[in-house]
Amino acid sequence: WNCAEAYAEANAGGIVSGTGSDADASVDPDISARITGAVYVDGDVAVSSRSEGDADAEARGVSISGYYIGAAIGVSLAEATLTPDIDTYISADVDAGRDITVTSVHNYDDAGDVIDADASAYTNASGGGALSGNGADSDAIAAADVDTYIGGGLTVAAGRNIDIFRIQNRTAV
Image (cartoon, rainbow, N blue to C red; front, side, top):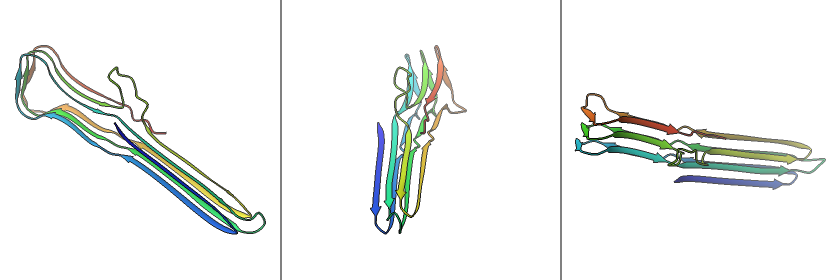
């Protein structure tokens, strides 16, 4: 399980005040499973990779100044990035008496159900006063790079099935 959480908060007050909060959470693992040497077996051959990841970023800020005089400026920034690189492949000759299976999974459980994991970013910037300006920007990026394959120019034989599966959940909120 790969997880990153970031929280930032900034508060200020006075005749002239300014705040800034910036929260960045990033999950970017490299995951690889492969067969690179010749395999000759009577049973099954399986190669699989699994990625489970979650990135959460939250930034909050409050900036206030005097009601009749003063200035307040505030900004809150949050970025959550979930970008695993998953490579699952066969790059050698394989002869299996039964099945050959190549599988890559991102944010699903063994039963094939989506797990509660995503990239999420939340911001809040508030303020008040005679002259007040506040801004907030949230960016959530879920972009798994999943490669699942059997290389070309190989001798790959199975007594029954050859299956290649790739399933991924790329949710950003």
